[in-house]
Image (tube, rainbow, N blue to C red; front, side):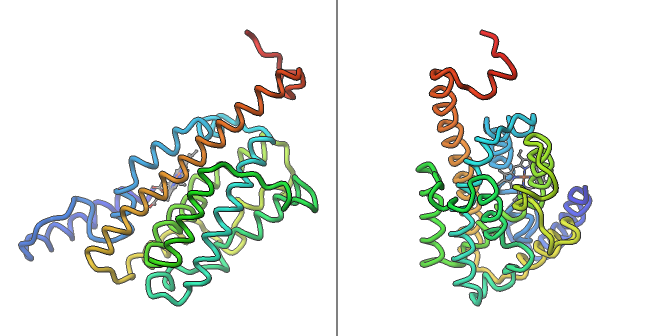
Amino acid sequence: SDGKENRGKHQDIYCTKMESMKSQPRDVTGSDLSEQIKAATKDSHVRAENTQLMLNYQKGQITQTQYKLLLCSLYEIYQALEEELDRNADHPAVQPIYFPQELARLESLELDLEHFFGPHWRKRITVPAATHRYTQRLREIGKNSPGLLVAHAYTRYLGDLSGGQVLGKITQKSLGLSGNKGISFFSFPGVTSPNRFKQLYRSRMNSIELTEKKRQEVLDEATRAFEFNIEVFDDLQKMLSITEEASSEKGNNGTSRTEPKTF
Ligand code: HEM
């Protein structure tokens, strides 16, 4: 990956600059927001990857029930995120990272939900409490501190353009889907090269002018954004274990018919 080389390069520049400026180094990762946000959320990313839901996902153990439930929460999350981004599109800390053409996910989520739930999918949306807390936070910062939206946009969109690309392939394979049916959420027709787009996005993030205080708030908010995602995954996992218990009590657990469980 390109990450390591770049990190080294920036660090050198940063150290020289720091020496000549004789100021206190903030950390060892360089002064770009894109680097700081990545460093600040590194541990959170590891924890997100290691939630039970994501671990199951990576093993290809995603069922249609699980995926449908995940789509419902993603729908609520992107609805809030994209409405707040749209409303604040002219805000100086939003405008540089506002890419609705390339990134907007709401319409693709609607297509996927319609694929699985049919035309009345809106009535079938169910989300756990954690998803509500996440969307409430998005609405609140959209209203009161739009400068923090970048932390949330970064967390979701760069994630979708990174690990999300693998998860899309896993979903397609696990659920036996053909073409883009049910998985349009994972595809970005407006982005030719996810890696190059991520670079553009990072440079746009780095162009945002922030006071030290605001910068720290953005970094803290990014950690919170990951935390919200982790809580959503944990809640979804709990909902699923209840659903599975209920259906196996009734003796109609879909998976146990084809792959008998061993007790
Ligand atoms: C980046 C994997 C879950 C947010 C990445 C990268 C990989 C990856 C391989 C690229 C790293 C690089 O280019 O240096 C995964 C896997 C996941 C997962 C396998 C779960 C199975 C998540 C989740 C989130 C997330 C749940 C947040 C909701 C991000 C972000 C980046 C990223 C924001 C960009 C980091 C940066 O370059 O600044 N992920 N990820 N990831 N991921 Fe994940």
